[in-house]
Amino acid sequence: MIESVSIHLAEVHRELVSEDYLKFETQQEGPFSTYQIEFKKNCQVAVLRVDFKLSEKPHFFRSSAYQWISPEDVDAIANYHSPKLMKFANECYLLGTTTLGAWKWNKKNNSLNWYLIHPDLNPVFRYNEDDYRVWKKQFEVSAGKKFSLGVFFGPGPVPEFARTPLGFAPTICFTDHCDYDTLDLLQAQRELFKKNHIRTTKGVFLHTYSHKGEYAALDQKPVLEEIKKWEKDGHEIAYHAFSRSFRKESWEEYQEFETPSGLKTIQTYIDHGFHQYNFSKQSFSSQREWLQHMQIKGVRYFWNYVDGMEANSRSHNQLMPNHSSISAIFQEKSSAKRAGLDYDKSRNQKTWLAYGTNDTLDKRVKVLNASFAELRRGKKGLFPFAFSLFKTLSAAASLKLIEKNLFRPDKSFFFSRFSPAFFPVSFGLNEDLMAFQSFSLKDFRAVFCEKSLQDLEAESGVLVAHTYFAYLGSNHPGRIFKDELGHIQEEVASSFEQLGNRIKEGRIWNPTLSELGDFHRKLMESNYTWKNGQLNTENFPGTVRWIK
Image 1 (spheres, rainbow, N blue to C red):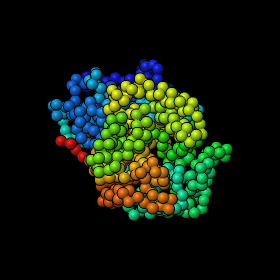
Image 2 (cartoon, rainbow, N blue to C red):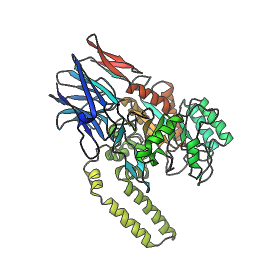
Image 3 (tube, helix red, strand yellow):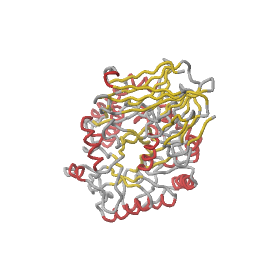
Image 4 (cartoon, one colour):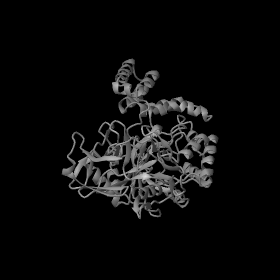
């Protein structure tokens, strides 16, 4: 079945001769083959991939939803969190015996591509001086870094593993950004979540400093006492930068930050705005220094500042690439109708601008809207508006944009195509500090409606939600609160009740970010072995079942 095995190693602009950089060892015992790759020297790597040339095309690929699909389906991706499993016409299976990396079927040359390093597998970027994203294209790999992988080919039964301690169930994890928190709204949130058995990872500011009014921070004693109550209720506390706005003291606050007294060691860091000490503002050459500093301070997880999609009634499972595409954005209208929800056209247009276009057009539309508002108020004349309109139309005339929207709307966004959840951003050193990716969640009513929750259960999906619990703007009609006093919107209260009932019944796993990351780390270290003529499981943290 496996005709040949080869390694593809590349920098951004050139192929590398793998023998110059790698040791590659293979071993076979019956239907069980193992492969070990070890780097002989430090280097920069854009792509490390092992290609398995097959003599026969697989009939089925096991999806992240634990369903058999076509190997050419957009969802035919198997990252560390999903079964690496294909089925053939003769009822035999090809099984990945380690979880690391991602599988992707290549129909052009009838081969299975096993990606171990790739920019889309480890999506990170930095903001340049104009606050545009520059995506990282290659990664530092240290000498001695090893990748161990293997495959089994033979008849069933074969195993597949669950992603939760509850078995084959969905996961919903909240990572909240505290930009709009006040003491009253903090108390109202905590009471809502306690009532509905929901736990969150709650971002906090350490210091009170903001250009836009006063908001909650831990140097305010009543806020610190309130956050201690959150922790007592089972929530995780996370750093959301260290203050709402940046000031000259901010660099010192970054260098000297510590977990406030009375709280457990904070393990999660979430970038905020364009603060200069953010991970996303570091040059690629200085990212390792940032990682080292955060590790010393006890941080183990940080947000890569990427939302794979804005969640809605159609798209809420970040393990399925088809939930992150232009087609998915425009399917929300019919999905909302089927769920009995009001369709938020304005919100969906903003989602399209953010995901279906590019950073340049998205920003120019925002500038155009501001310019039009100033024109209407008489603050500026027609010329600035006309100039802004010209720049916007020029950006919209991009051939790449037109092609993406008209001819490839089903293609998943590159930062979602390998369905990343947790991943390292360097290999060998500082690997213990992992990035996580999220979905933006602004419409709680839609994402936690009955239809959405049923879909997520059927897919055993994962949603790491990037939220603003305390946001009060009318442009988010599915927000939690009606007002600054903490009165909750009735439909949203009902949606949280539905979610809470499923959590209480054990139908949905609701971990904190650190709990989820720790479980997924164990998945990354799990594997299958071949002993006494049969497959065995090793180190899986949850349920394993066998497919006949």
